Image 1 (cartoon, one colour):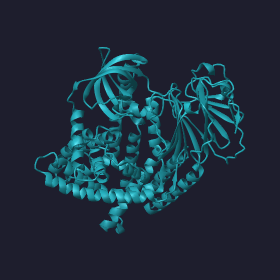
Image 2: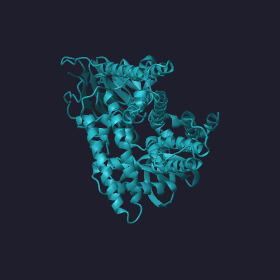
Image 3: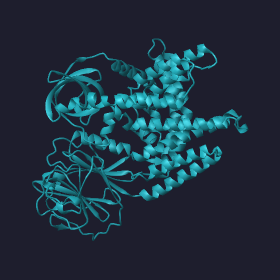
Image 4: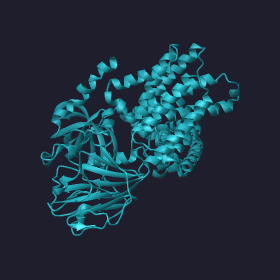
Length: 639
């Protein structure tokens, strides 16, 4: 009830203040709270906490995808044009971070000074600790050790990080509750003595606060920290431990200030994995009295397999409904990686802390050496799993999520019916493998065409398996949304990028193996190109506009740019991905997809043929065999 009542704070304090400045060019003064790499040289992407707008007091956050370089804690000034974030699934990730306003930098950027804040102090500490860890190690090992210990992922080798993604374990490079539990395990706990309980409670609470600040208050570590502090309070006052209550209350506390916190994918993955771990722990308690578990090594292995397997099972629905790739190998790689996690964290913590103390260089070198050895071994294991031909499917529909939910309900039912644990695990593994094989076959070679961006700069991404074709129409926020989309789906190869801008004044921020600019086709009609197995691309342009056609099996998906001539038309099964420009005769397509209905030319169009969806709306096409005599007419030329 408290969470529901205080949830109104999100609307009043966070959403409403920036609305009065939308679509206005205003003078902004604020503090930089977060930065990331920008698209162009000497530019950065930043999140600014706005303190003044045209000399009037203000308090809200805005994201600027491209602005002059700055650092966290600096007070910056400049002129920006504020706008509402596009209503898309990706915007909810920003909402969870209290960001409800986008901004385009215009002019007059200055750095007024630097403000010493707690966030800046923790950022400086994280940078120094990461530097200490990487000083004596190579980039491949030092980057992994720094990411796991301090949360600094800026120095991860792209090859190594892609291997962790391919193996299905990029989450171990993110500081979360797993790292907090290892840190709290440094202090022994004897519940029989009051002194031990209080020592453990104080240390674990301070460790949770320290880790939350060091990791930059990310959702994963915030959830873990809140639950850890509640657990510490219970231990300190000798209260009975109730993990489910701690988990639930931590979720309530985190969502009180911002109701969109539950939309964050890291928040969802963390809660789902924790719920799986708690169920695994309950099952282990039933096994504790069995005779065959007296062997400590066997018991440790089985507990590791059980808890890791339950955590992996419970995150499957989240992965599936967010369109993340799933594979059988990821379950095995999760189990093996946990064997290296504790020694790496212990060595990393010793080296990071000792590096902040004078005359402790010999301890830093020793801890880095041992931690580097474990990191090297883990990298080799990850590379091994990443190169294994694995059964993998791409959840382009809700089928995998539904299967995962059914599987979880089945496990819970078997557990409540007191079935033997070995029977539950065997049946669960069989059902999981069967679902993955069916999903892999059903989604093989499936083409997904997704509209991203906003009404002003709509973009199109066509994916097939692990390949993608991008049609870009401009807009820094659209470019970042495309990059996030490709990253979330582990698309490792952008086969072709078509720059649909009629007058591009900057280099396209999305780069692929083949890069084509639409205005370059004004002098000739290019040949059909096949960037992927079942997607062909053809383009043409005249003085006022152009069009690109994605030929997917026996479908033609039309993407216009600018104002097209009247002689542009098609005589086949068509889908039009529309924008504000009049598409000429293409408006007679069988199906029109658009991000908004507020286009003049749509006012006279038959409404049943128009489908309006938010950013992220997609259409799936089952490819059929392509034939050379497939008819398509474009600007009078027949192919």
